[in-house]
Amino acid sequence: MKRKIAIVGILSLTLTGCHLGDPRAKHYRASVITVSDDVCVMIQPEKDEKIVSLIINEIGNTANKLERFDTILISSDKCVPDFGYKYEIGHAYNFSVLLESSEKKEKGITPASRIFGVDFSLWKNNGKLEASSIN
Image 1 (tube, one colour):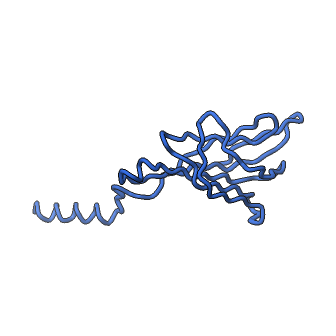
Image 2 (cartoon, rainbow, N blue to C red):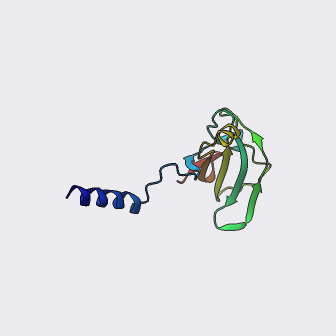
Image 3 (cartoon, rainbow, N blue to C red):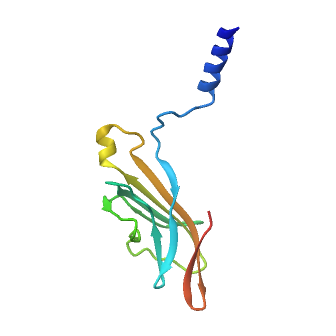
C-alpha cells in the first residue's frame, strides 16, 4: 500500500509539470509614467543585470515596431531608453525588456535572465501626455 502511494505521488509530481530549476526567464511588470510629455518605462534591475533585448510595438500595428539587441546598462531610477520611438496619442503599446546577468550565467544559475514588460495606452489630459497601464 505504501509503495502504491509512493508511486502515485511520484507520478503526480512528474505529470503536473513541476518546474524545479526552470531555466526560463521569469516575467515582471514594468511601470510606465510620463515625464515632461515623454513616455518613461522603469524597471528594477539587480546587481550586474543589463538590457540585452528591448522591443516596443504598437498593439494592433505590427509595422510600428522597434527591436534592439544591444547590451545596455540601466538603473532603477532612470527611464529605459526608447531610442526615439514615435508614440501616438490614442494608441496602445507593448514595451518589453530582457535583462541578463553575466554573473549568474558564469555561475550556472538559472534563470540568468528576467523579463520586464508593460502594456499601456496614451492620451492627453488638460494638454499633458498621460500613460495608463492596461495589463
